[in-house]
Length: 180
Image (cartoon, rainbow, N blue to C red):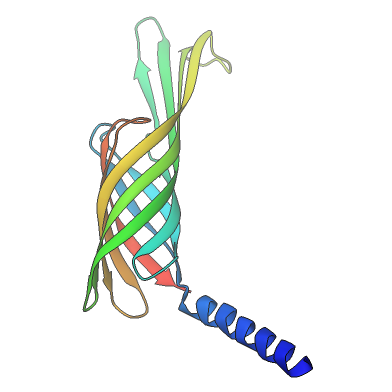
């Protein structure tokens, strides 16, 4: 009986560890350009292979919107600050895997955040005379296609994706992923 239990436990451990050895995790980052927002974003993210055809992942994009200052009449200035951030959870289905090229479909579910602040200042003062701010958080649903080229120690990727809610825009991301 002890030999049977030992063989069963050994077989189960071999299956678990062989599954973990086949699992591939990649992390990396790149840049994103949004056609609607007309700005560049910095993206970081990662993927986890569930099988040779399927993987899951997540990415965070911080859009580089910046601040703007407008000189108005009578010593007044208007300061506008915008912030945009998106966190996306992705499912990839790999439908082409030949040589070093993968082509995959992307389904995304994300949380998209945008804030806007407009302040009216009198030049030379240390606090605004009037201000208005607003923020919004939406759920984003996106679809797209990805291209990944494996160079061995790193992978190059490009992912055009359209969001049907949230920021409602077409975005193109490109960068590198490192298998770990």
